[in-house]
Length: 130
Image (cartoon, rainbow, N blue to C red):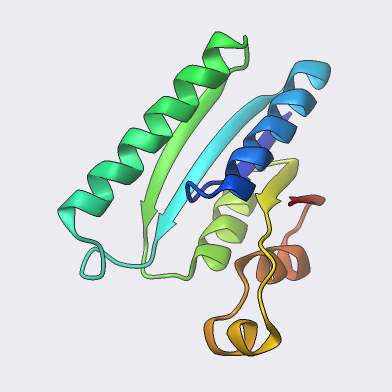
């Protein structure tokens, strides 16, 4: 079983990793932690290095807990939601865990909602975590 976790360094993303870890330990599953950056043009080298460092830290925490883990930094020109859904489908993930943050309706309208996109478009079950 493969569990995909969308990770952006926020507290809700860290909570999503913890929930996925609990699932993985109980089910003997592997966790794949993904950070998505829309494009290399938008990302500065410092931001990419910071994302890679956070992924490496998360991987070490999960492996210390006895959970098999992979990490990937995606720079595909897609929105984070599109990247997560596409990656989950191509990698044949069985479950997605994502963190959600409370945002205003105007903010969701202007910026979109990664969690909403994933929940509505994923091919597999999605667990959202606050």
